[in-house]
Length: 375
Image 1 (tube, rainbow, N blue to C red):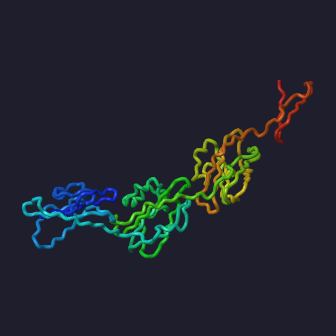
Image 2: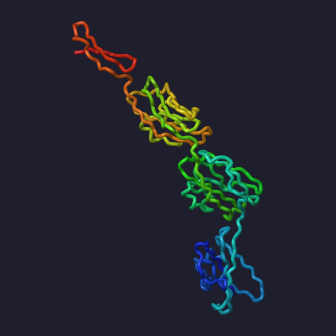
Image 3: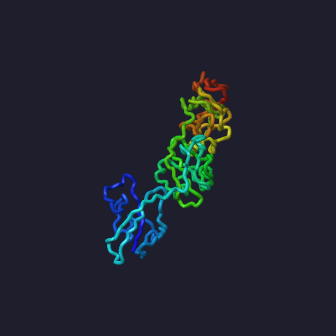
């Protein structure tokens, strides 16, 4: 009678020093006869179709076995263990271990993989890849680097942890072999503070989870512009004067400015500042205004700021390309005071007489004054 089963071999850090002189050694631990006869899991793997139990064979004959549903992973090392004994099912038979490594159904043959044609930037990146087999399929997406060690083939096919939307991933994307091809991942909503990992996986069109997975292509989005001097509101903003802002940037590029009510400030962030969804008025918004690498003074003269109201100003800058890879300055809170005030408070110039009273004062700004005399 003959028994058969499959067991995984160890990675290098799991090696032991056990004897394998009779083929029963799988580098994790010795596989014993009772393991094979009773289908002990672990160390054996797979379902019942991956085990052969006490199969009768004639001597001097060639027997072919198929081990199915073993859950083997491409590129991993295993051993098929065969134990042959006599008609009495004794333990005195012979066990042999046959090493196997299931091949990958497809792989990347370009070195390095991938070649980055454009980016990375806030919108995503463009890649050049070359696969070995034709026809084949490709999965590509981006995850925060902290998730990368948890990405398996199964999770890759579900785009587990992927950032961005549908245009920032490729799933079962058909590819041909031999010739380089480009893949564009866009609308990925990447920021300049988070480390990312690009996930790539390819297999043939049978989709048996037996392809090559790359989950160690790490990158960060470089900052394309920054502030040398952070934004400052100058002058006296208000309904009559609008708003004037001063700042200095490291590089030439573009600026976006939006003014929101103080209570809405917490709703504004790196991603939506450019679109200004919470602006108090369209006149309080500046979009993609060109700037140079020097001190900038920008006016929003028609921004209708109401007096005695709290506002917050947000200023976002990018480099000349503009792919959501710039800097959002810390929010600048402002409180609009009175439209005018006194440098010198009103005083009587002389004692009042029956038909007149004389008052003197000095206003801070040109404007209008009202005087009321009552009992």
